[in-house]
Image 1 (cartoon, rainbow, N blue to C red):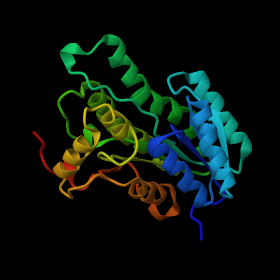
Image 2: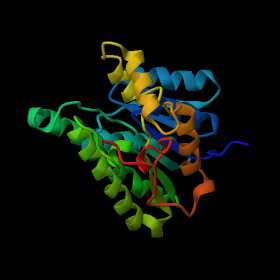
Image 3: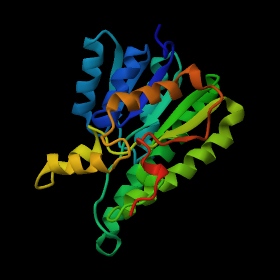
Image 4: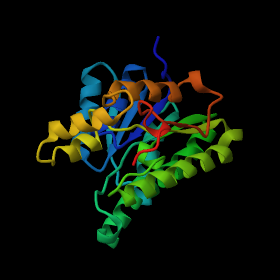
Length: 257
C-alpha cells in the first residue's frame, strides 16, 4: 500500500540532494510529484527518472526568491490535480564565512533562498491546501537552526528563523487542517554537506571527522530523512503540527563547542 496516493506533492529544491531523494520516494508512495528547482535541467532529470520508474513526475522551473516564479509554479501544480496535498521546502544554500568577513550580498542571498523562499512557497501553496481540505508542509531545516557552529552566521540565522516561521504558520493554519512541520537533519551523505565537504583538501577525512563527532558516530542517510518526510506528509501524522524533528543522531541534544 502506498501512503501518498491521490495528492500532488511539490518538492522545491528537488533537483539535487535531499530534495531529489524525497521527490523519488514520494513518487514511490503514489504521489504525483512536482520537482521544482531553479536548475531546470536537473529537475527534469529527476522527473524523468520518476516517470521511468513507473511514477508520476513533472519538472517546473522556479526561483524561490521571486514571488512570480513561485506563484506560477504552484498554479501549474494545482492544474495537474488531484489536489496539492504536500509541499516540501528543500531549496537551500550555505555560506561558510564568519560574521566580520560576510558580505552584505552573501548574507542576503542565504536569507532570501533559505528563509524568504519557504515563506513565498507557503504563501502560495497553503490557500490551495485549504481549498482542497488540508495538507502537509515540510520545511527542511538543519541542526544549525537549533544550535550554532562557527563560520555559519547567515545559514544559522536563516534556519533558526525558519523554525519560528514554521511554528507561526502551523498555529495560523491548524484550523484549516494544514499541518506545518520541520525536519532538521544534521550532515548526511547527500546534500549541502557533501557539496561543501568536497571542497576540502581531504573530503573523506573531513566527512569521517564530522561523522565521528555525532553521538551515533556516523553521518545521516538520505533514506532516513525520506522516512521522516513520508511520515509527516502522510495520514500517519494527522495530529502533528508545529513540530521540529531533529533528525541528527542526537546532535542537537548536546551542546557543541
